[in-house]
Length: 95
Image (cartoon, rainbow, N blue to C red):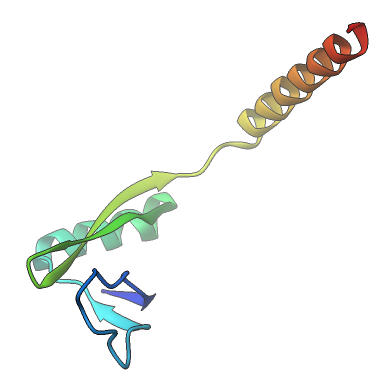
């Protein structure tokens, strides 16, 4: 399992690396990787990187397994957003 085209920010006082933007191997236990891979393959879950940070000389990655929204959830959110926008427009016209 690898993080593709990773580009961690260089801390102050460090020299920039010549190949800073490259694929990086993730260090994890085989069972963890197998579990993540099975969930991604079977359940339609996606691995999303949340943050990259330094601990000593290593770069650590915080990631999450996420499931996308259903179509009806997207429609509800779009309707709520449109309603809120209409309310804002009405309030602006009133002033």
